[in-house]
View 1 (cartoon, rainbow, N blue to C red):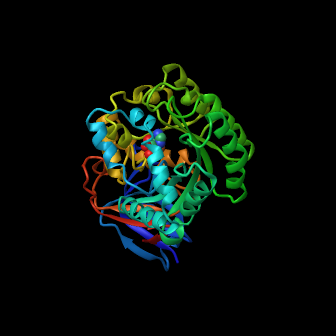
View 2: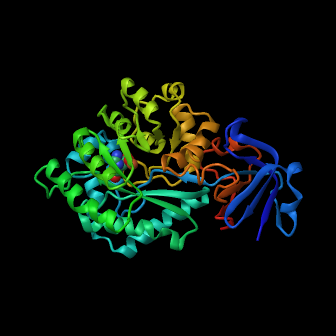
View 3: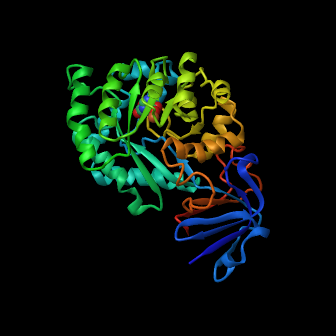
Length: 401
Ligand code: NIG
Ligand code: FE
């Protein structure tokens, strides 16, 4: 059955006019796909025959939002660390004392599949209320083989319960499991034992590593990436978040889908990033929650033409955030993005950071019919509030959810 959304302000995010705006537009949907997008007046009559008509009442329709960096399968609570950091401890101090990621690892290993899935469901529902139709989920709170695989299976199972596309990422190098004598031995284990199991069960669409002085060196990450690419998995990198650590250069060297965080990226690595076509994923929730003072170099990224995406980075330690709308606002206030760049960061550029730009992220014929009807007159309103959702009807795969 074809349906037509008409009398809509179409925020296509295709290039051309700002926001790819079509003022008085119509959108034709059939079989879960967008069949036609354009001015209402130009709608071919053949589409209208027998179609179900929805009047958007002049409201904005945007592509479904894409949250391209989350860690939302986890158990446990890290609010005590928040207190410690408010009293002056740094994220690095807490991690070196065995807190941080390792605290979540313990809680996640101890949690049942059902408990992990239920906690993830709550976070997913919150993201959907904010218009998310595609979600990336990383592992990385298991560190052992069994729990890493469990996390990925739980993430892969989310679409059975929620109208949502999910992409999973094996975050093989997140923290060093203290049961291993050193990081190199752990990298061997990840490459020789866990990664082949992830690939054999087709549990991941990409891999990721935390390239940082408190985590893994560029050489260790490179070893993992070589192995992953040889097995057909593209690369993403947690790069230059806390200190300049070479993660961005590494992302460029491996032609990564994305380099994420980038607060401490070195100037000389930015041109390489641009040359590689890698997306810069900025994570304003983590920046805000860690009270980071270095900003990612947004001006240079613009000059060099590096596509900028945004994500919630939903995780218990550095970004307990499940609102893309709030993340957009933070990206404008803290990083100086325009509201248009912020929306592009959660649509077209986020799709690219997942390698899905020919499928989602813009309103165009041939793309999946994932979109949101917002109770908003202009798309800039989405980034211009703090914690207010104007109201959203979410359409996934052509169906109202
Ligand atoms: O993206 N930087 C590493 N990973 C997460 C934080 C994980 C945690 O503290 O639990 C991040 O910020
Ligand atoms: Fe992260």
